Amino acid sequence: MTSHDVSADLSELRKTLDSVEVVLDLPNLRREETELEAAAADPELWDDPAHAQKVTSRLSHVQTQLRRINDLHARLDDIEVLSELAVAEDDPSSAAEADGELAAVRKAIDDLEVQTLLSGEYDERNAVISVRSGAGGADACDFAEQLMRMYLRWAEAHDYGTEVYDVSYAEEAGIRSATFAVSGPYAYGTLSVEQGTHRVVRISKYDNQGRRQTGFAAVEVVPMVEQTDDIDIPNEDLRIDVFRASGPGGQGVNTTDSAVRITHTPTGIAVACQNERSQLQNRATAMSILRAKLLQITRDEEKAKIDSLRGSVTASWGDQMRSYVQHPYQMVKDLRTGYETGDVQGVYDGNIDGFLEAGIRWRKSKDNQDGS
Image (cartoon, one colour):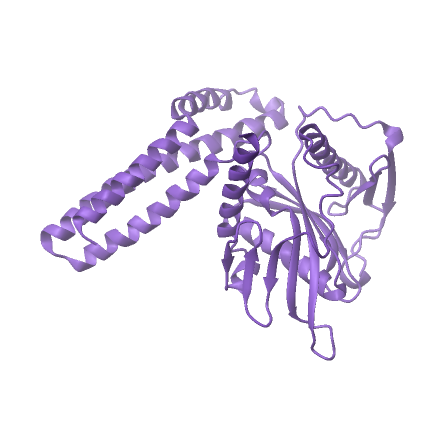
């Protein structure tokens, strides 16, 4: 790459970064950082742990955003110096280093630009994800477990926290359903594009004739509720059951009836939690998940986009949003965006950033079209 090429690329990236800064409103972020630092220094802050956690979490997020932008500016300046040095000294190794860093910075700016597209009311929140096996028998259950692992691996790679609330294991293999939280900046906004029916096509491990099998799994993503959310749930609308927690194959993991299942009778939504030994803790967590699901239904009804959240994902033929084909060829393809990759195992290992970015851009484009 010539010095002129690098100069043009740097100019383009600086313009993109400038536009990102406008959307993020840097002056306001800096003011917010100052206010949050003052709040964090207040010795009485931790008198209210929930509020303190919110303040410190938001401060960390704001500081990370500002640091990312400063670092990107510094890296662009370093690339300019390195490329000029490479040309002046006719040094191929320095030129290659500049090219590699340029590609890395372009990816980092693209990622930051995608985040600016997350401007929904709840996009900054943590996410509660439910994965449910659909049509396809044991292969669907096994596939559902792979999807759960995929999201947990993605979260781990991005230093996002996770907490598994409930897992219902299938008899032969895999899971019938699972509910877990992913905690981190814009977790909900980022992962919400994963909602829908996922389809797998592969040679079945559970067919003694080795035939090709199709299986389905439904993914539901809702924002974590906060104390300020106004969701009124009358006690008479709830049915609460307690049961003994269990692990794979029915193996007991608890000797008391500490697991809790709460059913919201008007909607039929049922949530369960068995990850704590205390029935009280499991009940509180299950109520939090239920509130998140009801909040999402309220939001969707207000926007008149779907009749109900529960009816939006059927996990069967005709409504899949992504296909994971492992036979007769290797391909994962998103049917909404057209994004695809042949690295199926990489996807199962959590490498789904390309799908997330394409989904976020697709959703923003669709929203713009609907609003025009």
